Structure formats: C-alpha cells, structure tokens
Image (cartoon, rainbow, N blue to C red; front, side, top):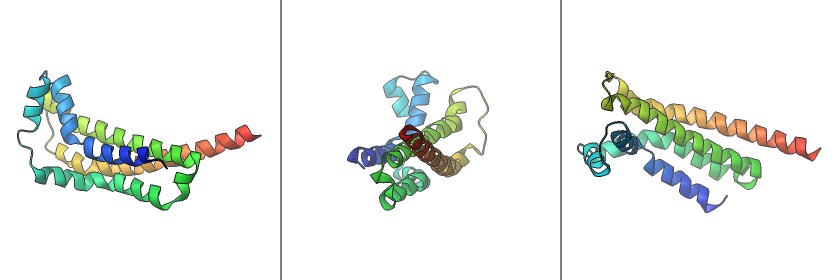
Length: 150
C-alpha cells in the first residue's frame, strides 16, 4: 500500500470533522464570509471538545487502519480498491452526518435537543457502512477479475 492511502486516512480523520462542516455550513448556508464563518465556528471551540469528538471519530478510522495494517488487503489490487472505497465511505458518512446535525443551526428549522448525539452515532454508522462498502467493493473487484480472465 502506498503512503498516499495512509496520508489520506490520517488527513480525513483530522480534517473531516464537525468544525469543518460547521464552517462550510456557515459559508454556504449561513451567508457568512470565510473569515466571519471561521470566527463564528471557533467562538466556543476548546481542545477538550475537539478531543472528545475525535475519540468517537477514531472508531471507524482506527478500525480501517487496523484492517489495512494487519490483513493482506494492502497487497492486492481488489484489496487496495476496497480500502480506498471504505475510506471514502467513512469520510462521506462523517461529512453528511455532521452536515445533517448542524444544518438547522443556519436555517429557520428547529434544532433538536438530541442532535449532539450525532457526535457519537455518526462514527458508529460510518464504521459499519465503511465495512460493508469495503466488503462489497472487494467482492465486486474479485468477481470482475474472474469474469475478465475467462
């Protein structure tokens, strides 16, 4: 496996979080400028809150890291493809889940008192969706290779 996958995995873990999504929402939905949106989003930001959310986000990314390091998937083309698609699925679920959690903050819609639970449940859903995506891509790639060899 090339270094680019491991760099992408770490970058996705660090960058795709509730703060980035909140900032994108502030700019795209909340009509804030880039600087004003950043100020608005980071107004109550603390290291503790970042670490708290990262503790849950590490579940799917850590699982993918362990699968990538301890299995033979990194040595085959179908395995590499499965790992990349699992990473994309995990990142997409995080982005869309955090988007849904915070979208109502920038619209007249009512914000649920339980929306903060998404910090816990989005990574849990990302883990199983990433696993299913990786498994489906692995099986599809292996089937495709078998069909093309005939």
